[in-house]
Image (cartoon, rainbow, N blue to C red; front, side):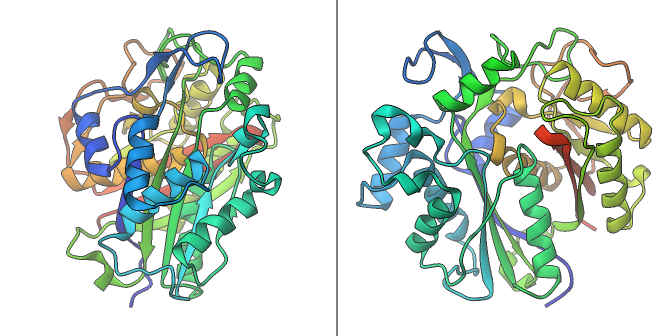
Length: 385
């Protein structure tokens, strides 16, 4: 046992596949899961999104579970957690292991009229959803739900690492998930934040986000024996902050993200010059990308290679911080930088170093950032040192 927090295992489920390996291979091939969809149950007009294939989801779930009393999101969580746990020594039935679920909306689709009678009304509550998932796995501890806008996934990793470091648990299973529903799509449409085309983070022609759905699970552990021979990747540090600027608009100065990055680097005991790669939030909205560029420049990180993975998966909300962290971890293991898909011409005022093509580079330290509604920000540092 050590004071270090290691990444033991992981899984990603998105439109690009149902395992981390499937997803990462398609990222390396610069394949996007964003497509134009026509689904009147979600939106009356065609829309761009990254959606998990419903038929494959159902087939895989039926192979695992012979039950029909789970929602679409619960199925994603169960499949993802199950896959991540397969080759792990961590056991949710053990009091030393905690399950943290991160989500922004949970089973919000159950509020739709045609679904109201399919499940008990209380299933829309996040705590009830977590209880159902915990019971499926026979969890010894009550699952913790973390819902803090679009930093939920990254913040769940920060909180999980803190709980292990404080001695409360040996392992924490962090799983983040959200689906694209009528509620989420219409909500962002009402803010005029949705692009009619695949999103283009940091690009001069960016005009809004593309929503995505999916689930990601990462297992954190302090027990080095749980790594099964995998390369040691540590969670060095992580911090959250709030710029208290606006309910939906980020600080124009990037001050809140500055604080999160500065404190995360301090906690990790590294300097800006030690950061080899930034996995940024990069939603492709005008204000978010500009704010991030200002924050990175203020923190002397503008020369560090940077990408947003939203062009591959869309914005997966409560899953984003988890699946993007997993992708960053595998980038570190393969010493590979992948392009920020959709980016062509710099569209922010600061000279940040957007990755344009796949290239090899030794990656020892990675900074993952996230920002969200309400002015929340998070920064996590992963390291091979």
